Image (cartoon, rainbow, N blue to C red; front, side, top):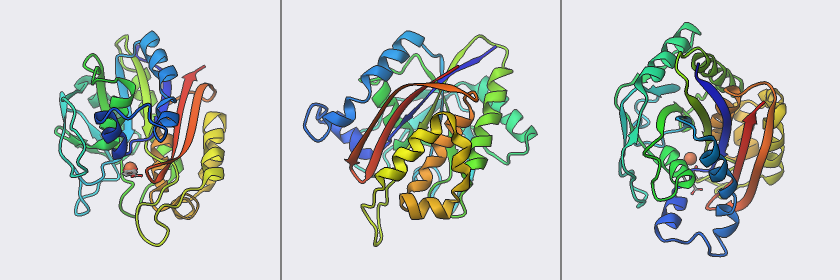
Length: 279
Ligand code: DHB
Ligand code: FE
């Protein structure tokens, strides 16, 4: 049977891609951020996952404001990183895992999630930056990726509880998939940030740290925050926490926190990085 070994959270800001291209990892601005990744890369190197289920949001590359599925899942053999206008480098095609993807889609529909099933999907910085951070030099060729995209751009957006339950259903699918595969789950984006409007640049460190603490072994405590509360507490882009909840829902009730890093500001965000292992 396939097995979920752990979960990873990471920022997905386009500026990270630029910092990688320009080799700025050791500069004073970027070092405290990039220093959060070697322990995770080491864990990935030891555990050798076969598949990444990657929760992210599409910022307008595949789904613009005129078509906005709440939840969309990739079932393609390959995903293309395309120019989305941030001036960041694209990355080589990302391999998909069609069989497990379809099994996840079947389970989600049985569990009454109304998903959009994507046999073709261009992927943006929400997915590509995390891969670049975990596998520097685009050395992710041996990994298959299943993209799980959550609407965080246009209201109405799903609740934290709904995204957590989406993760649980995905875990059920993985654990009933009859192949010996190790799966790691990524929750990308966040933490508090607001990119435009009167509160542009807003970051809420106490709220971010509370979320990081809760996500470890009391994620249900976060259900009390509505999407409106998230916007208020964590900025207009604060609902990206939904991807962290999807990741956490896919893990067991109890997990071990192996590593964390938090640094502000990275571009406009509080940048949180975590490694959680399934007990
Ligand atoms: C930034 C953050 C994001 O989550 C994003 O998708 C794009 C930009 C930023 O802080 O610059
Ligand atoms: Fe984002």
